[in-house]
Length: 167
Image 1 (cartoon, rainbow, N blue to C red):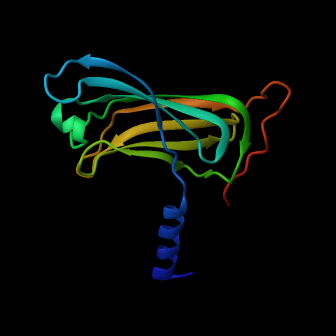
Image 2 (cartoon, rainbow, N blue to C red; image 1 turned 90 degrees about the vertical axis):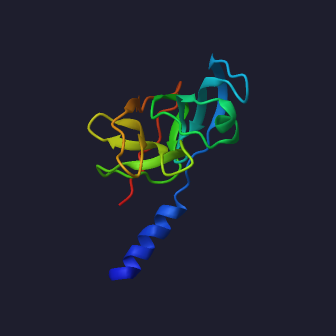
């Protein structure tokens, strides 16, 4: 395919990529608000949509007040991530193996433009999945980030499944 047909195919492929959805595990209030929700730190978990047996845990600050309660507050760019093997690892579909990685999770952090993203990378030399979380903003970006890694290990007597890579 050439020209606009290739671009359309790339956009459609990107849109078809499933992103994980997070479940809230818990929260800790950090500041009391008289009106609206309290400020808190939320802990959320999501399973990698292409790699069974891997769950990632995110912690992030959430603003309170009325704007936080209705979802229009501009959240901070801070986030922490820890991904762990929680069962036998198997690849449900091929994963990206290039240096750009593959986005597996995205969540809005403001009413306009800012998103929290998690990107998965494959380190073939070390047989490790690497997950990077960062917050972007259309205007100026954000250097705040966190990283975690999951080594492909046996689960009991079950070895990890063969790695499936996109070609």
